[in-house]
Length: 84
Image 1 (cartoon, rainbow, N blue to C red):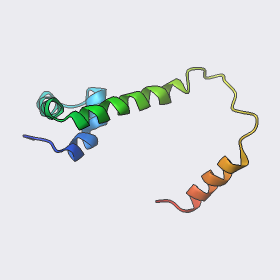
Image 2: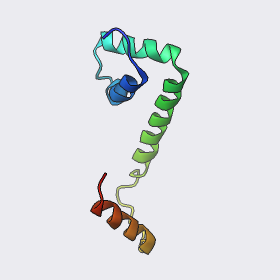
Image 3: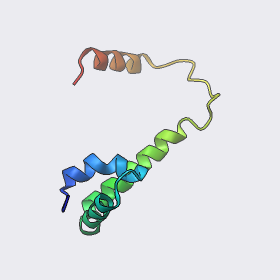
């Protein structure tokens, strides 16, 4: 692994953030980040998305909304019928 494309960065992003890349792969990954502002922005947005998703479960005893909007239920059911 000598250089990465932006597509490669996306593929290795979770491993990078989890600290699961070997030292050489991590160096190559960070070399790409040093020259690609778009990937740095993508990385920061991904990190923020993960943080926000995790914060949704800060209170494990929180109850779900007592009423889920019918529109949301229809959208979820429609998406499950037509994957892809």
